[in-house]
Image (cartoon, rainbow, N blue to C red; front, side, top):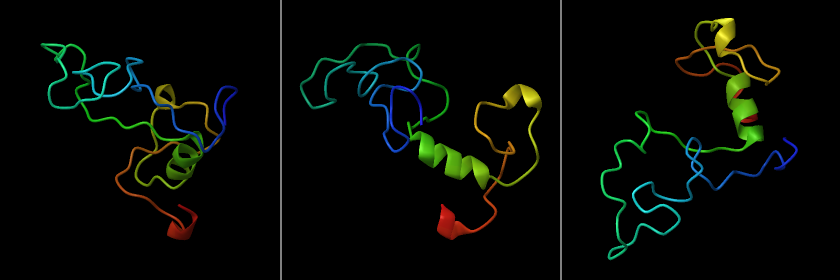
Length: 94
């Protein structure tokens, strides 16, 4: 885990922009009738992202298959960093 969340908790903010909820309706639910933020192309990431817990990230990274990554891609998890595709190891542990 981290000092601000337990390992099984998931942050509720957007993973890059610290927004809550849909980028087109920051801080409000994306319901019919809620005003949209207008052009959000500068707000949305180019790839889909989804926040997950530290524990889930650690489990997934530990079983990631494929080739090893360059050291510049390595983060703070105590795992061997791989770029995929797919997973290896015991799926029961995922």
